[in-house]
Image 1: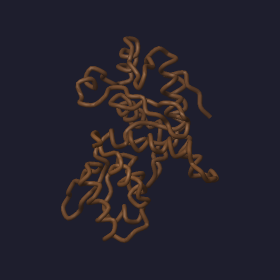
Image 2 (image 1 turned 60 degrees about the vertical axis):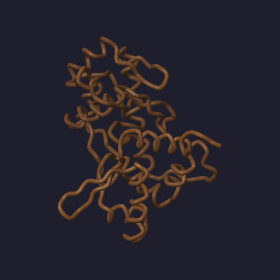
Image 3 (image 1 turned 90 degrees about the vertical axis):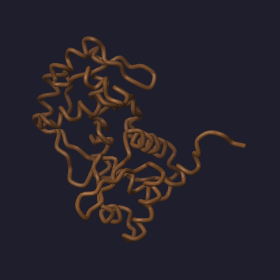
Length: 229
């Protein structure tokens, strides 16, 4: 008798095209109504409700009520990490040709991965922090150094407070487009918040795509020595 996690059940839930599209749309960390997710999945509202019920029962989604509305979001960072890993696997093993369009190019350039920064921008910033000695790259994670704790503190990030949260501090998340890890975990989320608060990036409407602003180019060059076109 096979013991262990029911991989087939989780895979079957995620593998349905409609549910996969719903889950992918929630990778931006936002919450959506059933009607919005039905539109994303290309199914009727009643069909979407059935899909959402299955995802809720499996613990892949969480739901919040506000008045008459119900808002669905990913259950947490672990679900987002699993989806990002599947995206990386799908890109590397895709059996059919998929031309890269403008939308894909923007996603590869810079996007959110649940609550942290991904794409070319996220990976470049992560490894710049490693080069500067602020992060040490270890298997499956990054470790903030003493110098990094001081530097990130000046940037407005309290590593001591982040370390008390019930989630990994600095996890390595394999980027599906760059094929290298970017910074995830509590520190990745705090870094994204700090960058966004400074106006260094602008989020695209109804998309995970973000755009580096002129202030962001200047700030990244000044504070981290990172020059991006």
